[in-house]
Every structure is written in C-alpha cells, then in structure tokens.
Length: 150
Image (cartoon, rainbow, N blue to C red; front, top):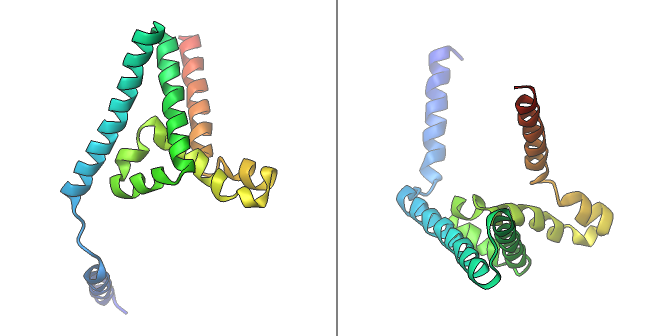
C-alpha cells in the first residue's frame, strides 16, 4: 500500500468510526461541570462560615478542618454510591475538588474489599491516587530543596 492510499484508508476508517459516535454536547458538559464544581466549593465555603462562627477557628486550623470535612463527605458519598452518580453527570466538576481525590482513593478500596484487607483494600486503595501522591511528595521535596538552597 502506498503512502497516499494509506492516508485515504486511515481517513476512511476514522470517518467510519466517527459515524457510530454520538455527538458530544460540549456546552452542556461544561455547564454541568461548572455547576457541580461550584456547588462543591459552596459546600466548602458553608463549612468555613459555620466553623468560623461556631468554633472561632481561623487560619490553618480552619483550612485543615474544612479540607478534612470535605474529604469525609466525599468518602461517605462514595461509600453510599452517590458520588459515582454525581461523577457520571458532572464529569470534571466532581473530580477537580478535594472530594474527587477522596473518591479516587475510596472507590478502589471499596471495590476490592472482597480480596481481603491487605491484598484487596489496602493494596488497591492507591492504584489511582498513588501516582498523584508520589508526584506531590516528590514535587514538594524538590521545591523545598530549591527553597533551602536559594
């Protein structure tokens, strides 16, 4: 097959494959992601206002407590199967906030719990989130070393 024939063949094949795909609704998907991501951030802001007024938290204590609450809510909703339904409809709006990270750690742990505590839940828990954690630790260490020597 010559180069020109191969290009025509590839183009025909790509056109054939695209004929079976449903058209994507980019605006609708972006709008849903914006709404859900914004709603998650509004819940975090609500937690912040409540913790500031009820417990007089501020600064790092307030930020840490809000993060912990959002991680807890994300993990709880994952355990009940609600977060996966949210993710199917919201796309990136549900995975970008910290609750998406909690979901990415909790989902494999729940899925593989039948394999046992060590080989199932503990080993599979970091399949998705593990590379993110490793990259975060290495990047943080590198930035810290650069800051130390400058």
